[in-house]
Image 1: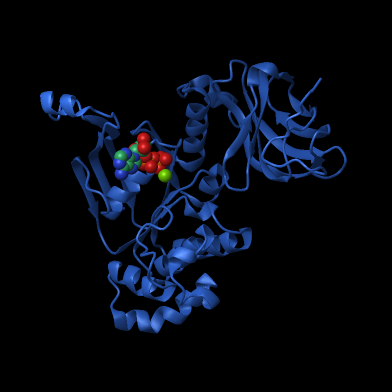
Image 2: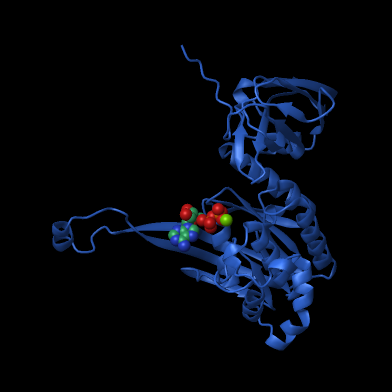
Length: 382
Ligand SMILES: Nc1ncnc2c1ncn2[C@@H]1O[C@H](COP(=O)(O)OP(=O)(O)O)[C@@H](O)[C@H]1O
Ligand SMILES: [Mg+2]
């Protein structure tokens, strides 16, 4: 298979000015001394993307994913190494990248389409389709500085997909915006795949990577630690996320043997109330007896980790066959909102993943009271 994108031994350094306040005397006596910090953000990164492949990029915040995509899109130059791209590439980078705040949505469409190599004439023919896809008809002639982040994404995605590039590069942005629009973007991405085009996708949603990608690479502190089929890469990512354990043959054997089948609220729903007890049941099947720990993560609507429980506090013994764990959250300390639930069975020390389910449910928390904020703080005043 011919490579469409080749990343060869790429390094990227950022030089940061130290924020240290220097006195005038210091500046005169030691001009320029120690005034830079060197940030080594990408280290010897190499991988290829073949024609028609969809490749995911996984990694913790700050691991260098966006920097890598910017280098591939030509927005940043690698400090050393080489990047080759064959064909037309359209990048949907971090929010708002490439938009001019003072210009209208319409003018920004022309501007970003011209950066993708489309002539004004070509955009004239496509503009209705772009605006329609973005569903921003009413706002398209207002300056984009008044747009919400969701509106930025709509506009950027509409331009990028309508330009019909050979290679589409998408950075995380699909997590923004409402579910219906996300689903529409997903449909478009699947259509892209069916057309045999190439996609490079950063996502923090492991299920999305599993569902969409053929392969994924995992970045850890700027280094490529895995380049593997999507399911395998997700597992490596999870292990790094949890404690930096390396892939072992043993966990390989266990992986696939333990499956978190389902989660069910004991009251028949996922409705919970601030300050109340919330109980649920988790059905797990296991091929082997496993001594492990149960773990739960909650993410906010905005994709922020709200809590990851301490696995050392919740040991579980699984026996071969299907079993149900009963779990209770005491005095739910969250204010109202919808929280995505991830569940895991991890090794007893918590540093490798035995089974994982991403977004198994959405917990809907309602709050009656006059407090506000993110967490429910119970005060004892004497
Ligand atoms: N323009 C920049 N100047 C200086 N440091 C940067 C710049 N862009 C990113 N970084 C730093 O590089 C590291 C990787 O960032 P990034 O590529 O955005 O990671 P990710 O997308 O995986 O969260 C972070 O430590 C970030 O602070
Ligand atoms: Mg990023």
